Length: 322
Image (cartoon, rainbow, N blue to C red; front, side, top):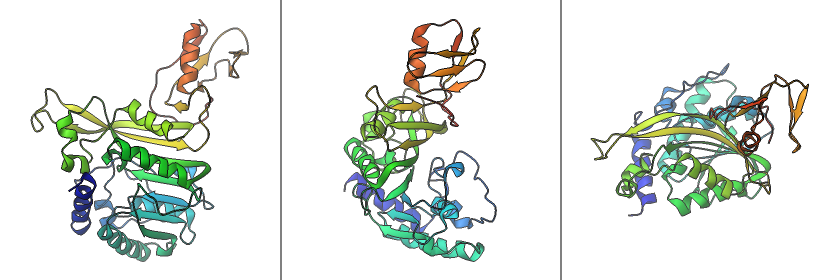
């Protein structure tokens, strides 16, 4: 049985019998006016973060959500779109689709504004998405891609890129590792299906997204998620897994590399009103300016006494330049 078949069987099990402890959201569920979430959706929210970034969304967009789970995030996306079939929710596991459909009927009973027709449920595979090229504005996945082995991860990211319109956005919440996971654990297909052994490091993960053709990446959040316990897994030391939330934009990768915003900021405090680095960046005196990682690196190399460039916070809230 392949690792994808084992994953399929695991999520068939948790569709039929919800397991709230399978994954855990590491940030509190955000409330929205007029949205009541059925309890079963919370129990089946098998993610490691959040992909619904409320300040980014509007009613004119079509959303592709891959790996529907209990339907909580698909419901949250539908809160913003509120148009027939404006959220396309894809899942490989028929039992999960059936459960999500039942959950959306419960949500309709609790929310007068919601119609289950807002969400189109489709059986399909992340490696061969059942949508046309350049047909969606937003694509999202929560704690799914870390399950894939390297070649399949490349394929899944390429499929998301294909489905997005130019300028479209890929929302990801996924687990990453702070150190390499031993190969014997990576080969444990059950652990991989449980999002515990397939994780890449931060840089490996970001490089994969850039390799799929995304030219701008914003790191929205990076925080602790789980521990691979040295006693339970016979390791020399504990391995920390982290939850990474990011947004990747379908725009061309610049010749000098992708723009990755990870919370670095430059502050100029010299005698002039502004500082011009000669490469298109004008920095107003005393006004913090978020910058991408390659710009931060270039500015550090100047060793300018009137510039301070902060270290990455891995939390980017916008307003920067590259």
